[in-house]
Length: 355
Image 1 (cartoon, one colour):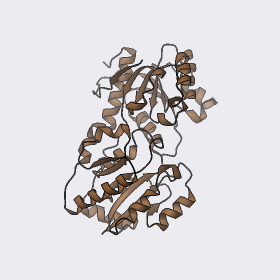
Image 2 (cartoon, rainbow, N blue to C red):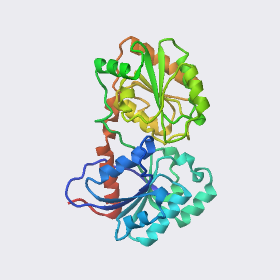
Image 3 (cartoon, rainbow, N blue to C red):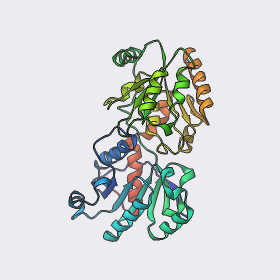
Image 4 (cartoon, rainbow, N blue to C red):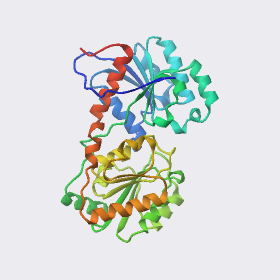
């Protein structure tokens, strides 16, 4: 069984660098949480290390070969997994670079057949085990697939996602055509059936003072019937790529994450972004979000009725002028802190240090 430990988050200083090969979805459309996470890890790691990246969708191409030709990585890090293909690929790359440490980020483990098939997991782990598996959901550690298990959360851009004044909030509502008098409950993400978004219609119709606003991602094809149903139910749905998605968080009063477990990454990026904008958050109970379970203004619920009831409570507190500070709780999740923790994990794995 793998050893569990925490990424330290300690900031490392000095001039030395690691050679890191990142494998993941590095295509250009960043209207999707997982791709933004991979992009942010890459950009921050490049500030201190020599980093090459391979787009997993173009893996067996001349472009990919040109990236790795002549490169001798200390670390080979795959986003996201763990899947049969990701572990097999890491095994193949580790044959090419036998000294390299192999790492898998298990950002979305519940979608993997390995999470449901113990025999397959044991068999694959016996021949293609990663050195380290970085996890966020403690109930999905998959200990058979790595020699060591380490907790590492996602980061959030605290400079981009931050609250604004009431005056600026009203300006944003005018810009996006949102009624200034309404209590705005927002959701950001893909628009398809498995995400439990029909619940937002019930939420919209629960209180005449509510306005549900949905930002529908473009990376995954939208369900046209669901889109029409949401609009007919009174929800405002913003379609098309929205460059400044932070505007919608800022004009909102509450963030709703109704997505059923297994249909999102373990630690939803939109939840962290909403908290960075100091919004109260109501979410289906994801194990990785349990770190916020005692935070004032953060509600983990078990089902649809829980979301409706929590929204009523948040609205009452809003009307009564009660203050919250969810932003304070995500300050440790800045990308600077999270990537410093990842660098420490890298260094500990190779027995090195920045000098």
